Length: 173
Image 1 (cartoon, rainbow, N blue to C red):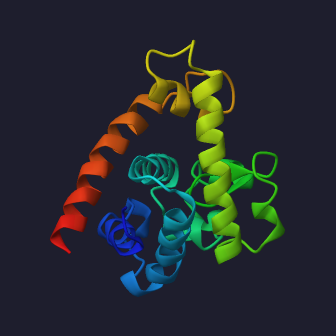
Image 2 (cartoon, rainbow, N blue to C red; image 1 turned 90 degrees about the vertical axis):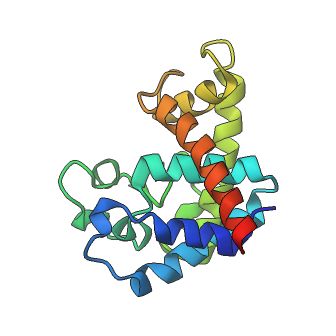
């Protein structure tokens, strides 16, 4: 099982370009909350990689997103025009449970992880006949409509890369 420490280290080692002015110390509390929620809600290593790949391709786990300041992001990257929240870019109708809590809180993040895993598996089933592979269907359905979201292939590749990087981090610790 991938540890929360390995997930946090991976997240801290891969800051998004929008975090260039954010200190590591600023990022640690939010990264730690995501790492702990992912470990608590994702029972399998491949699920950890799927979640991290989806979050990475959606938001790069940018500090402004994780801390609820999407309005300070560059134009065109403001959490779906301020309609989404969190690392997985979830809209209220996709994850109402997360919206019961303050953005960035441990409770909200845990609900975001639960919702995202549920949505990934839902789209995997829904899109299985419309995509070349189950993972392309899984990520392809996360684009809002249909089964062919533009970044699906990038997420599949990212999940594979992230799984290897996490395994290496675990082996080194």
